[in-house]
Length: 296
Ligand SMILES: C[S@@+](CC[C@H](N)C(=O)[O-])C[C@H]1O[C@@H](n2cnc3c(N)ncnc32)[C@H](O)[C@@H]1O
Image 1 (tube, rainbow, N blue to C red):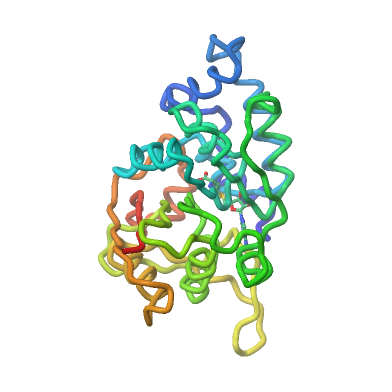
Image 2: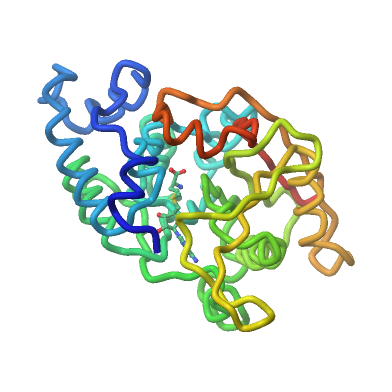
């Protein structure tokens, strides 16, 4: 694991980007009306973010990346809200503090249809510290859930074939490139096997046509074929390679036929402005990548 000082040098911005993300500010104000002065939420945000950072030095935590609601920028966002209003269920896998779920609620979705799930359950009390919505939020939180674990998605699991929609925000890049299509297939097993069920999300991608690979400095080293410890490969997908990844995950038709789409947008530098970050990723031509696979 990367040490804290190295992580901080690349992935830490002290001040929350409250001016760049008014939607995140108004989301917090919705739940915490006493924080009408946005400046008043800064110490609270810093305190909660520091507690999250001490749990794990995730770049998205240090850089306040979780302040950006990737889902709302996708063209399918109105459809997601509508389907939730009709009683469908969404799983936010790798939900962190469940900000996206809270945003769905503010945008009109009933909280009963929202399932938050993560490997780490220590994020959840922090989210209640921030939103103070224990009595209001009727959705679910499942911690200690590893998408690598067959008990989560295999026969006999309560989560198998349960969800109409699954959102994966800044999630797929956490896994080595050679594991990613299996991870996508594991997620597909959590979806209802019906037409219209969909898996969608976003990640940091690249404008380079065929993707861009580098060594991940934030992931734990793993054993290579020779038994030596080495840094994992980290891949920035392009629209082309992410579509290929999803097609690969459902190849053979056993899991049905799918419409797969991806698009790219400008990467949000408000949440990633450090010089060390720019230098580290200087050749990656980073873009924001959105993708969606919907069962035909
Ligand atoms: C980079 S954060 C993304 C948070 C949020 N979805 C967003 O878009 O800002 C990745 C999240 O995935 C969770 N995670 C990491 N490995 C996981 C696994 N194997 N299974 C389930 N969740 C995992 C982490 O605990 C973390 O909350």
